[in-house]
Structure formats: structure tokens, C-alpha cells
Image (cartoon, rainbow, N blue to C red):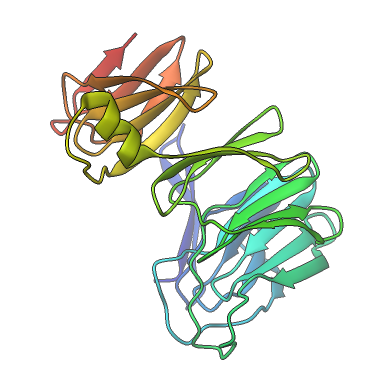
Length: 270
């Protein structure tokens, strides 16, 4: 409802709380003494993190109709990248709070303010930004805003980048790998078809919760508590059944996979 709070975890007290009169709709980022956030009308704010005072407001395009996409902020060194619900990607100098460049990725013929943009979380790697929109995935030069490559797929979940290679799952259920240095697709496999052939069962649609890369393997966690174990090359190796259902995003600590089950019990897998 428009409040921001600064809370001292050690001393268990609120440092400051302010109501800015409009709901926030983004993740938060901190750069030096600045707290950065965006509101539901796509205004980008820089606040003093110690006092909550407004340092600068950068207005961007507003959409009249709200959807499930949330404004996304990403920091790389002293550069802030801001993807708003209109489909515009901004590069902002976080120190001077000035716009470096911006580009609109909502390449629809309908560019009125009510047009909806659906995207995924921004990924930045070295001099590249990866943005997935409704129908396309863009590999963008982070220094200039120029589009290096535009690929005809949209990502279902947040991708992973390993040694300039992008791994992701697309909206049409493909496990896909892209060489970010040249934009070439290294492989693209239909997950439903692979599972069907591996288990020798009728083809069914699987639902994804998350995926990770560990020990040179790709692990895809399904909502029905199964794990698909892939070689990094895209070949399906195993279909594993978990002992307990997944109720959180899994994490890796010291070669073990940890997650919470539906009873909020911690499950540890080697």
C-alpha cells in the first residue's frame, strides 16, 4: 500500500517507516547509500536508505491495465537495469541517477498504454543482458542497449548462465541451450517427449518448479515431486522420485540439495 520500512534485525526495532502514497511493484536494490524501488505506475525511485528521503524520481511509461509481471531491477557494478511493465528496459547510472539508454521490447503492433507485457527476471552477465518477453528472448549489449540477438522463444522460468552458455526451459516445454557469444542454439529438446520415451509411457505434460546445475548435471524439479536429471549436453539421464513433496525453491549447500516439504520440514538430499 505504499509503505517502506527499514528494520534493525540485531536490535529488533524499526529505524524508519514512510508511506509514499502509491503501492510498490518491484524487487528492491541497494547501491551505496541508496535504496532503489519502482511503483506500480512504473516510476523509478531512489531513496536515502538511512532516512527514507526521496533522492530522485525517474518517471517511465505507465500501463493502464496491471498484469502478473512485476517490475524488475538488476544491478551490475554501478549500473542499474530496470525492466518495466510496458516492456521498456532502462540502463541507469546508479551513482549519478541518470539514464544511460533505454529500449522498448514490447514489439507488438498494439503500442497503446493498456498493452500488456509479460517478461521474466533480468539476467546480466559480463557485457550482456538477457530478457525474455511474451514471445522472444533478447541478448542485449549492456553498454549500448543494442540487441545482439533476438531468439524466437520465451522462457518459462529464470535461466542459468554457465561459461557464456545459457540454459533454460521455454514456454513450449523445451530444454534449451544457447551460446551467448554468437547466439547459436546448441540444443533444443522436448522435455515431455524425452520423459515419455525414457519411462516408456504415454506422453504427458510435466509442470516445472525450478531447475539448477550441480556437478555438471542439470536438475529439473517438477511440481509432482519428481526430479529430471540431465547431462549438461541435454540428454536425460534419470527420473528420480523425491521422498517428500517440494514446498520451496531448492538450494545447494556443500553438494547437498535442501528444500522444505509441505509440512515445512527441511529435507536434505546428497
